[in-house]
Amino acid sequence: MAAPLRRALWWTLLTLTGGVERRGRLPRSGCVVVANHSSHADTAALLAALDARHSPAIGAAADYWFASPWRRRICSRLAAGFPVRRTGGGMADLLERADDLRAGRAVVLFPEGTRARAGELGSFHRGALVLAERAGVPVVPVGIAGTDRLLPKHGRLRPALVRVTIGEPLPASATPEEARDAVVALHRRTTEEPLRDSAVRRRTAAVVGSRWGLALAFVWACAEALSWPLMPELFLAVACVAVPRRALKLSLAALAGSLAGGLLALQLAASGVQLPQPLTTDRMRAEARNELSVESAAAIRHQPWNGIPFKVYAREAGRADVAPSDWLARSALSRGSRTLTVGLAFGALGFLAHRLRRFYGRYLALLCGGFAVGLSLIVAGWS
Image (cartoon, rainbow, N blue to C red; front, side):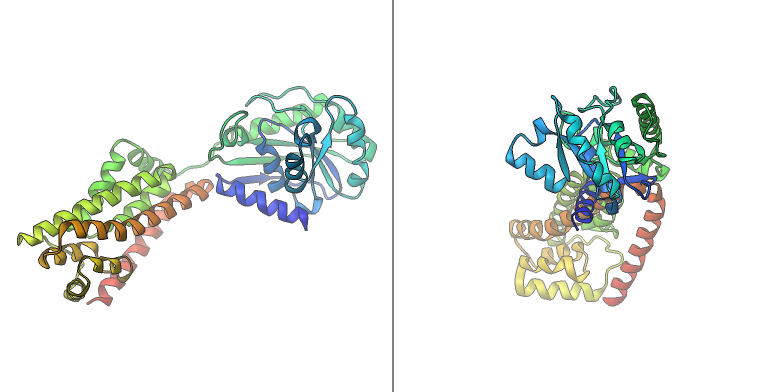
């Protein structure tokens, strides 16, 4: 069960950090996998992409990954790593894996021997080919792209889509140069293939990601707290999926706008000014009025769950002479929990659905259609 669990673990983690794609398959028999190596994330990418039935074992530098007990545990248990000496004796370490290959396992090696700079491939050592020839199994070239952006050498983890392309098997008699050329071709093809995107998403991202994005979130939420019928969560559902990295800032801007608009609505109502409130009903106002008479500003805690718009509570709070400071504190807690949760949830969705951004237009259509149906049901329910 170890191999399927490792595959599930690394597939989940890579999905959370931008996604992982695989093209091609390993042969059904045992094989030696040779791949380019520019990041520690290469191991995770291969364990997530290769079939668990091959129970892949990863060759790891003995002087680094097996130099301390905690590294040894991490490498052997989470990455199915086995030590390969780089300063003498490495060939003997590799040949010990011949029986595993004959039993149908995949042995993964990075023939460069160390991580190379992004976009570069060093010369290949002969060890992988000697092992394949001794075991009588093919050599399978694999190109990995995206790991140098996900976890650069001496850099920090950042979101990126990882792609793994499995090539056609090479005979065990192949030379190191032939194996390297095959990996280079796969890596280049995988890297140069653009990620398909939606023109609608690009235009949305250009607006939301500009200096006007946060102002738009603030104004939208402020207007909704006064009169605008479309809640700020709809804006966040559109914007945070388009630009996930701005989800927190957009959510905070929307929260600030909602609080500012709610405080202004309270002050206007207390002064006798009545702004129009489309898509609200008398029953909504009566319910909010009743809750405020019993709980004062604390009544706003019901708003995120009962479908009554925030602006209805703000107006009725002004009519009930609720203290502005108490209202601001209570509404910050209530609106904050909902706005931040929704914004970050849609940001996570955009992050996880990075590979599906070409369907952003369809997502918007479904979102708007679902929102229209939901709003109609809420208004009808409170009529």
